[in-house]
Length: 261
Ligand code: NAD
Ligand code: MG
Image (tube, rainbow, N blue to C red):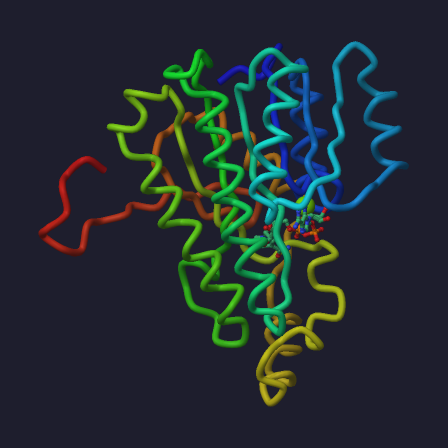
């Protein structure tokens, strides 16, 4: 996929990995970029607009857990942009102590935004089709015992996105769905980390694990995500580690499964 002139939506684009994705899409020539985030980041948004005066940067303050709000946001973006080509769902939190909120934001948010993308981008509804990239994590693949709630949402995202990445959906909608699973990345997500885990007895272990992890930068991860977008591979899942993308071979494990993916 060439990015020049394309219109994109990035959730969680006010900070961390999402902001870098929005920045890099603009640098790559995207025509219009909408950032959906629950937070403001006025300083960065002013800088973004100043750096790309001939491109549009639309900022919408919205909670991705709010299904109706997300639908209304897509309607607004579609009206303003004319059409949407790319959606990158990055918004997410780490707080295993707040189970409800973690489920609603991480898994619910991805589901809300993906289903709205389907509605507003589908060829069946007058859209051009396009590409949706959803943010999971390596801990959605390999269980990390210290963060089971977060891990469960990330595992759910992989399954949900692979379902929508079915060829049958693609034939109707013209939309491809892919998932990325980055390893540890230096962002605000690690702030007060040990206060947000559910088993305090694992906190020493948690510190050790966090120290040991080789952490990549948000910029590196965003670059890899643009790489994944360029591949346009429907249903694909990639690990992002050490500044590179590693495609995963997802083998069917039960015989009842139809061979569509
Ligand atoms: P971050 O906290 O820097 O960025 C998350 C962004 O999402 C923030 O701008 C935040 O305001 C926004 N957000 C949070 N809740 C929201 C909501 N309800 N509605 C809308 N926006 C919301 O963290 P990050 O590390 O950049 O994380 C981005 C994504 O990458 C998350 O989904 C995270 O799970 C995932 N991830 C992070 C790492 C890592 O090590 N940092 C590794 C793998 C995956
Ligand atoms: Mg982010």
